[in-house]
Amino acid sequence: MSKSDGKTRNVKHKSLLDSFALMAWIQNEKGAQLVENLLLEARRTGTKLLVHEINLAEVYYLTIRRAGEERARTIAAQLLDLPLQVVATTTDILWQAARLKAHYPLSLADAFAAATALELDARVVTGDPEFKAIASLVEILWL
Image (cartoon, rainbow, N blue to C red; front, side, top):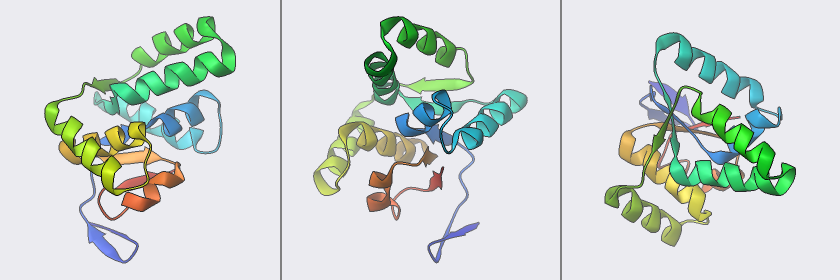
């Protein structure tokens, strides 16, 4: 059990990286070392960190905008070589994301990350302040 914001929660053993976490790692920004440690632990234990396909697409388009297509392709290949499990949208995730987007001030990509974490009982690894709105719904490991 873990205490956070005065509430007792189960500690999640699965972690889902959102695009904020992946971009922080790629660009060596604040929180990059935490993401690196999670990746190293996943590789060491033979487990995988989760990432929703929408968040992976978001990382790809952000990299294209910031560094060009060639760099984005290189980054995408590197990401797919990491201990990551890319989660595809299911109808359960789809409807959960839509409900979250309807009720909370989240981007659609963040809603998919949160919905995936809820459906797969995982914590979200992020530094994105939008997730504060749903911190009571999903466990968050803040960068």
